[in-house]
Image (cartoon, each protein chain N blue to C red):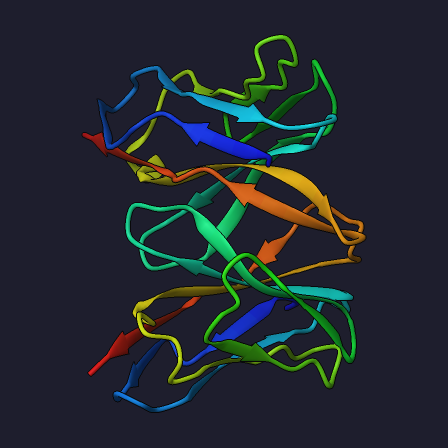
Length: 114
Length: 113
């Protein structure tokens, strides 16, 4: 079945460092791809998405490009802030019984030190 | 403000007890979902509903039940048959079953006494 694999965490960086969180997927067809962010004790918030190959999703300085040839959707940010500390989830859409279901990676915990 | 509310924020269950988690949305979304999150793991789908009075099992439905009597509400009951209920439970909704973007509530943490 369809699946998502994220880089192992936790990831710890200093403020203003460059961030990459790797995400690869296995899927039949061409699913949409998502990054969600979860701040401590809260639900998930949609960070960005891409719906087809070579699309770039972006939001709040974060970017990710849908790479069909490498089945990847890596999350990047040029200069992280302490407020970016959170758990990041990569996900893909999977159509099941006429409905869209999200398949999530295991999440990557990011800590930014001042 | 439009959004998804979940209550309570924390819930304690005694052995052998059924408990019900509330999920309400005022986004006029047709589809609603329940996920379970365990520490260090991604989210796993418990149940989903595409429309009022209809719902389907997700990947880990055993020990759970749901109802969808109103468009706005999708309560989840954790039954005594669920032997390991301690987790963070997240409710989500999407505009329609075919819309891929889901919006999440703040979650309910269930603990067993």
